[in-house]
Length: 378
Image 1: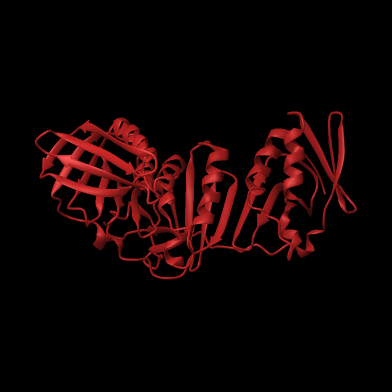
Image 2: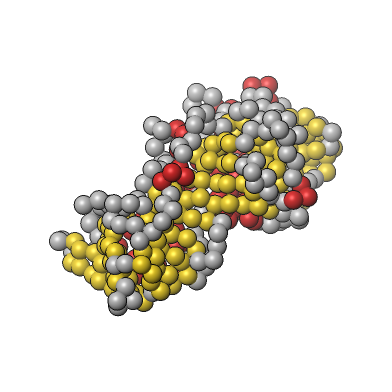
């Protein structure tokens, strides 16, 4: 196997695939990246048996073949080379790397023991803007449960709703808060099938890899992300990168039943001022991360306070547009900060029934995103 690439192309490809590998004592070849050249196409491939990533890299091919190299060492070394042409050739059990005055060889393993990659039929696909998907993903993934005791909520729920064929619903929850985001499918690229699996749960770790890929590649070219679904697998394809991962089996909770329809109180609050006030209150919260939010109709303000017997207390009032009656609730400040930090709108709507029921937060005039936070009950 012999080929040449620009250092920048190698670095970008390896930064995507090497991110997936982790030290594996029982199956050491999983620490490696498979370098595969077939029909003049250079590919870097890694897998942890749950997720597989395949990256195409531009370059000049002199001889086909395949070989595996320790992924982290390979990436770390390539990243230090000058931004110039890099020549690579496999000789015996090493890959020889030459660029300018650099001349190195890295020991590897033959590719025979590398796991076979899963294949997925891509006839049933949906296409979205990569930038839109990344934004939507970042607005729901933080709410996903980190506890795998309930595997059905340890990933993001995707609903390809047949009643809204141009839309994907993405949901994350840990049972204490919930985020729901709608994203538009590109109309010209919509491919529907009557037997298409409409509802899937994609693991948290798989989606962090997808987010990493989109971060590394940015909004390239036409910025189209393809999502293909099979019975127990999902594929995300973006530019020259393909990621295949397993789906979580099980039934996602009927989360719609916890979203209130009617509210006793609504306040429209400046997002930046709300964020600053929540941060100041968090400095005096107890171990429960609790802060108190009081809405006063007569004075037209929202009072945010916290009390800690060890450190002190704090209270601040924000002017707000208020409808309904006076109300009060105790919330986990981290849940509110997560929401405020992932939106860019200038104003938010804060809606509530009472201290015992979920609060709803939405960016004002944005119908595509909603967030639910459960109260801390005294």
